[in-house]
Image 1 (cartoon, rainbow, N blue to C red):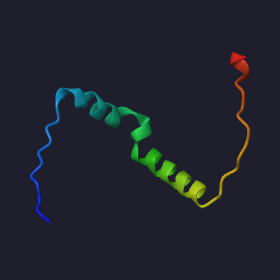
Image 2 (tube, helix red, strand yellow):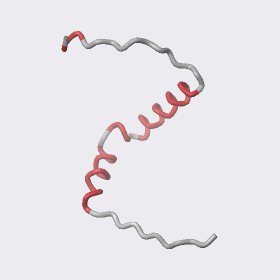
Image 3 (cartoon, rainbow, N blue to C red):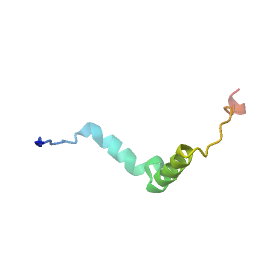
Image 4 (cartoon, helix red, strand yellow):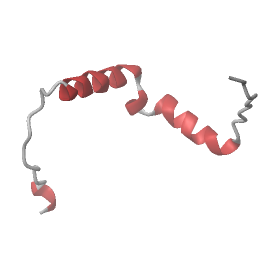
Length: 59
């Protein structure tokens, strides 16, 4: 199998996403670990199905 050289150039359009990943709590390593653990629990069948909870403030 031959290899094809591939160069990636990060342009200015990608910078805001990079900045968001550094400041957004969603991308925090601790939060990502919690999400991975939760996903693994759901994949193992350890979830509970329930109806949607209505927001009483907006109804």
